Amino acid sequence: MDDQDRLDARMLAEQGRIDARAAADRAQALAIETFEKTRAEVRDRLGHSVAFARDAVRGLLIINGGAVIGLFTFLANLNGKDANSIHVVFPKVWAAFGFFGFGTGAAVLATTLGFLCQDQFFMVQDRQACNAGLPANVPDDERGDIETPRRWGERFRLAGIGIGLVGLVCFWIGSTLALLAFAVNPTSAMPRAPATSPASTQAAGPPASLTPPTLPKASSG
Image (cartoon, rainbow, N blue to C red; front, side, top):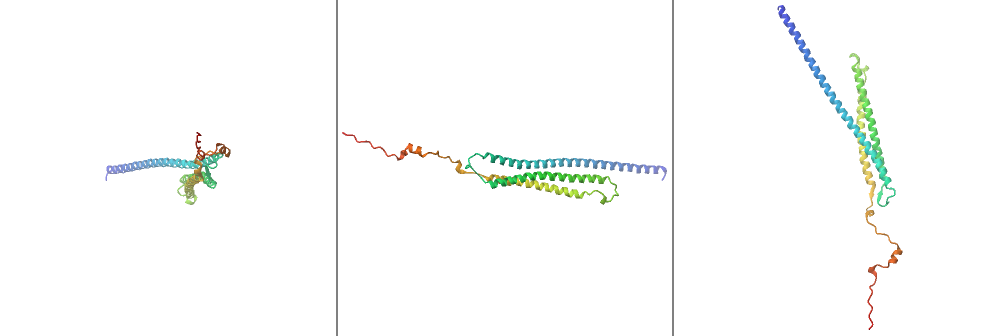
């Protein structure tokens, strides 16, 4: 093989390395683009999930807390009304208050569990970033533990969902008890006859249907 052939072979090998490097760069650029798109989509979906969770907890606070205020207002409006018109079963009223109050507390607890969940997942991300900056020869027992906060974050997340469902069930039960606690007396809706005193009855005399007819007198003649 002469010098020209060796030069051609060297150029071909160099061109092959250049093409391989260009292909690797294109693959890396495509992987980075795909990763960025996926991360943006995950961030967008996570934002929607957090917004839905916030709206759900706010709804639990509104319906349970508003039910307590509405029940207090309704009882206050009964003061001075006709006692025979509405029959109130007070044990069911107190039970409804209890369920509405427990539902409100469940909403607050679900919010707290959501905060703890996000705190644990933030700890996972922070430790992963710290571990990525360590040299490769660092043993695993000297790296930050990410499994423990991840497990606790998942537990807090499931507990928050369960507590939120309990608050919704409390609202359903409290609403049913509140409806059953008030019953309209059917006799109160019937029209009542005006009351008459004995003196007015005597002054008016007997009814017309009981008065004997007056016979005409015979004429003399």
